[in-house]
Length: 164
Image (cartoon, rainbow, N blue to C red; front, top):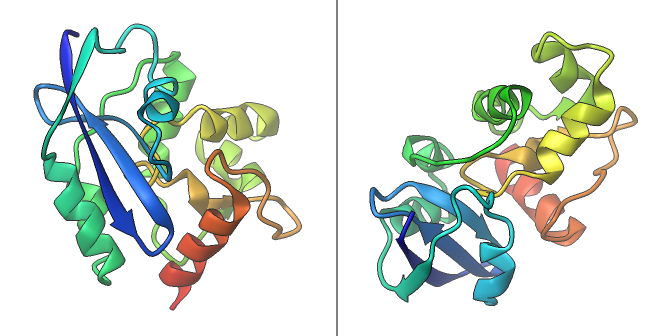
């Protein structure tokens, strides 16, 4: 990986930064205006050597999501580097419907690993292209939010938007 494009847009949840590779695939995204915070979430294997500011196709999908088209994020391509289980988990996260969150236990079961609840939580915690791989749709067994790399207020807001 050589050069990536970075773009920060305003959202109702604050600044949202997207890092995309030369093919337009999202490598990382999150609710920050700090490019270093977004870049740090990218797998070392995929981390770009250089970054230039510019327009990303993913920004249009994020704007559409925030305008009410909750399915707009599903068409955005992502690129992630991880273990076989992580890759399967990130793929499975994209299948969770808006407004229908799973618990970490249900997510682990969906991966065919019902006893791997901690591993399921770890998959969510290591998800770099947040929003486009909607890890915010996974909750604790008691229905509480659990964790979220970009803060529980953002997670609460996203879930409320999707439940409406």
